[in-house]
Image (cartoon, rainbow, N blue to C red; front, side, top):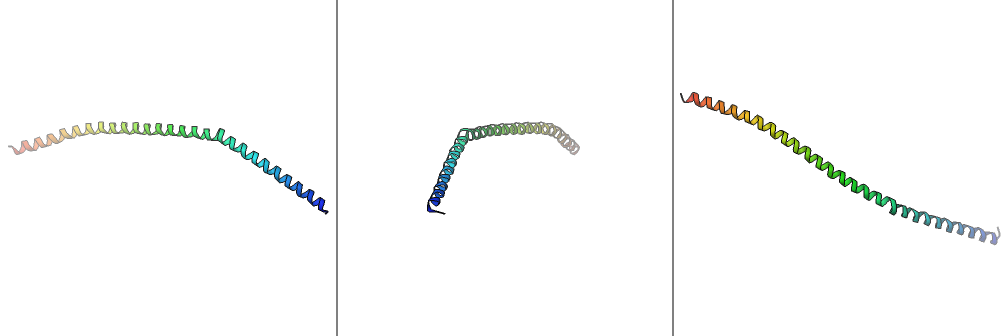
Amino acid sequence: MSSDKIKEVKAAGEAAADTARDELEAVKAHLERLVTQHLVPALGRAGDKAGTLKEQAVANARELADHAQSDLAKRNRGQSSWLSIAISGVVGFILGRLSR
């Protein structure tokens, strides 16, 4: 190959490298615009929605716990009142037998 041919090939290679570099920079800039304009706001909205859903789930769990606690308290009150009456009856019977 002649030196002119080598120079032409070298110049064409450098031009192709410059073109590829420019295209990569353009793609990079386009990708950055897409991320900042579309992806970041969408992720922000998703984070807000997740926070709202978390708060609702916590509120529902608290409400269920409160209902369960009140149900248990009602059951225990009913059982404890019958238990108190039974204990009083047994103690009264024993005291009555001892007082004779």
